[in-house]
Length: 164
Image 1 (tube, rainbow, N blue to C red):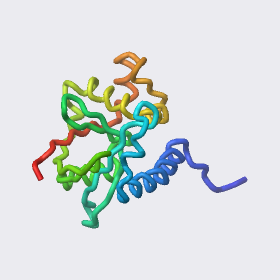
Image 2 (cartoon, rainbow, N blue to C red):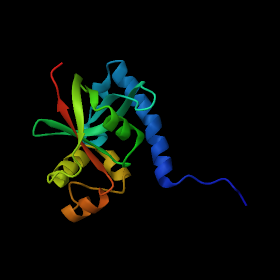
Image 3 (spheres, one colour):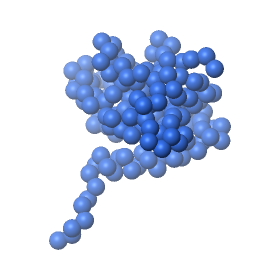
Image 4 (cartoon, one colour):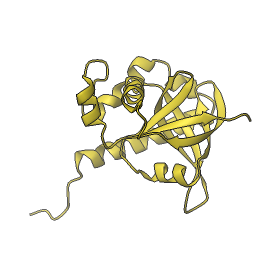
């Protein structure tokens, strides 16, 4: 009997996204982040969050799907309190690398907001194919109860843009 553990579907998904994330950060670093956002309905809206590691103090980068709702930027942490989420809580001053430029921002967790479902749905719709990868969510068709259930472990983040 093989004693090696087979990775779970979640773990395989995380590894796949980790590889894809490195490519996306590279594209943004060389000024081609706009190309990743060429077809938002399918690929999703993607930005990079430049932040500081809570333990290392190093500058780190994480690409995420995001939505602009009422002129404000939101994203989710689909794996709950991920490493990057904990970094943002420890150091909420970030720089957002958007398809057409960089903006300083302050992040806040708004998971308990009464607008959570509406905002979560907007981020999921803006996530393109990634939404289906996380439990088969179809934010355009699923009812509120299904969205609420499937996104229960997700954290919702708001980025307050600050003047540079």
